[in-house]
Amino acid sequence: MVSAVGMGANRFKHEIISTPEGVERCAQLVVEAAALGVNFFDSAAAYSGGKCEEILRLALRQIAGKPYICGKSSSHQEKTRDAVQRHIERSLKNIGIDYFDFYYMWSVKSIGQYQEIMATGGPYEGVVAAKERGLVKHICFSSHASAQDTVQIIEDGAFEGVLLSYSLLNFRENNIALETAERSGLGVAVMNPLGGGIIPQNAELFKPAVLNDDIGISDAALKFIYVHTAVSTILCGVENELELAANVKSLSVMDQKAGIRQTYVTANLGAFSEFCTGCGYCNGCPAGIKVSALMTAFNQTRFKSDTFIYNRTSTELIKQGNFFRAIEGHTEFENSVNPCLNCGKCEKVCTQRLPIIDRISEIYRWVEVSCASLFDRKKRLESLLSNQYSRVGFYTAGGYTDFIIKLYKRLLGDFSFEVYVFDSNPLRWGGELSGGIFIRNPEEIPGLNLDVVLISNYVYSDQIYEDLTVRFPTVNVQRLHTDNDVPWIF
Image (cartoon, rainbow, N blue to C red):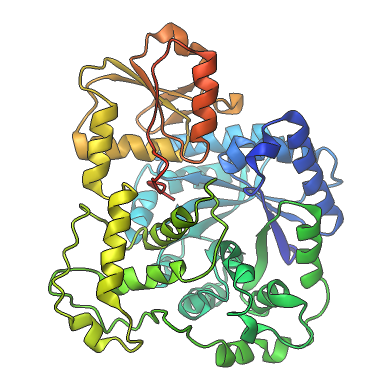
């Protein structure tokens, strides 16, 4: 039996985990969670700046018995059967456990990606082989795909559990995925229960979801999720003891309004003013614009939000980041030229009377300033990685760098130079990205005569640049991202 509250291990702040003392403080928070009854801990090698597995290892030494531990591998990085098995072995060793209770095919965003995972010799075969060896107990997947795609994946019957987003923000569209999971006998873990901070930061908008006995909107939001009979556990990312205690308290006592909560919230939390309802009447744009997808993602910019998990504080960049995170996987921008014909067809059929033409214009302005189009990203890569180079390093290792490498090949063709990948986390050394590129100790950089070291990491780009330029003053170090960029992959 898993605890109602699970603990995600990806929200520990960089300034805390950058020191051994800070890592130990985070481990103590995990220990405190276990003392409060939390027995479900979600991990990934890349979480919390690569410190997640170290934090769990320190914590588990102080916890009696073994709680349920989740692991993950990304099909962007561990692309083959063998790569997944090596990744599992390495993570188990790093955490200091013999097996994962639940292992997730991580961040499945489309049916196409799912099919790649399931292909002969692919990642799914790797986790099946690991299960046969006793290294994994249950095979699951985490979904960032549409509700319809998630339903299809569940109904294919390859998985025993699913991790998906479900909250007051998206329950109407994602309810079908929960119902399908329950009907199919899958265990369900819920992520982003507070919408990445959007819900508590917009408490007045979500006030209709609060019942008399609730202690504020966060309490009501967690109770609303857990009343759904499909939900086994809710992953809450916490930064301190107060957040942890509040989350546990919300689900530690019987919800006296459980019988009416879903019906009450569904009836009272109406569609927000100036928000797209996703009805799809605007589809069929003469210019080929995916209007409904753009307007649904634009909803994220209408909420007040100072939470952006990619280490940025600019209000404008947070707004843009929330939009591009919501649109990822639904459409791709070839360039930043607005194709809108100003014909008004979409606005005439919009049930919410939204200023769609103006919003599309704003979106394409964001595409231009945020380097969000394929055209602009190709130009950026061309400018940073000259054809004259013979040796190029990427820093850090992980799924993000793997994505950048694949994007380069997609836009510019095969490398004309040798590629090296570095990471500060010694637990990653000796691993590999797709294509058999080994992950190296950054201390090797001066001896390799590299033409450039490109910092592909988005979150800690400034800190890494400062560190590398101080340690290796004669090395040409460049940043992929400017201060105006949104992440190229979320």
